[in-house]
Length: 335
Ligand code: TYM
Image 1 (cartoon, rainbow, N blue to C red):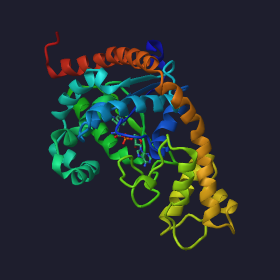
Image 2 (image 1 turned 60 degrees about the horizontal axis):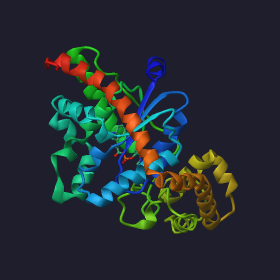
Image 3 (image 1 turned 180 degrees about the vertical axis):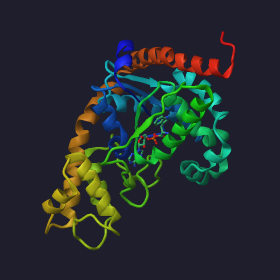
Image 4 (image 1 turned 30 degrees about the vertical axis):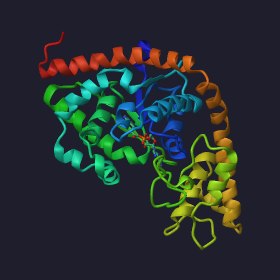
């Protein structure tokens, strides 16, 4: 690991254990995480500190963390190749986040669309953590001198802010942090709700038919796709005013690797019923091995524990170097 760090580019990304992991998370991010493991030095985390910016019920939160860890392993993250730890186990994240808060402007944070959305949705709990959430994200990334950050399109604005914070800090103190690049897939970067295709598919959606979970049974997945909102044109083509079909075509394309044109040809003269069935079946086949592996991991907590401990230990050492460097530059007296 140490030696590889010298040569290979560093990839960092994280996901919140805030509930079931969705097809959106999978196509927008996790699939790339697994694909990047062979070529890069990959570091992944469960962002549990981010999750408490929205109030969590204690037992459910603990359960979500275990299930999310098992799900990500099931998606193919291999702890022999990559680090995969729980953010709160590595103390440097909260420490650097505090420091970066002091190099992040109120105005910048106020412009974050996720903050605006979430504070509207949780109007009774617009806490300071929700507001400074992006500085913790910046800390996650900058601690590991990450070159690339594989995420879905909804995280682009946060990554731009991470870049700005990094450049600002480097501008004052010299080269302390690598300025990270977002890595957003061409296909699947923005999977939309199956019930309202103008909104992104989200694990917090209250309509169960809006969102496909990685753990949904095959017949549930098929039902959700059959009920997906489309339009009245009944022609499978990508275009304006066809958000529902555009979304299904995007999903089908991301899963099968077929281009939009190939998909239009495949379903020429066929109705939406056939198309929805094909999309559902492709997704079921993609997720089948994930679900099988999940059942194995979730029933083996000691294996998961071994993985997250080992990863956190390495992450702590690596990230401590960056934290120390930043603190020294600022003028802190290190112990
Ligand atoms: P989170 O947990 O909301 O989502 C995890 C990843 O899934 C992507 N994603 C989607 N992609 C396509 N379509 C969708 N409908 C969809 N929904 C979610 C997200 O873009 C993300 O890549 N703040 C982050 C977690 C985080 C992080 C980080 C990410 C914490 N620290 C540092 C990168 C680097 C979040 O809440 O993601």
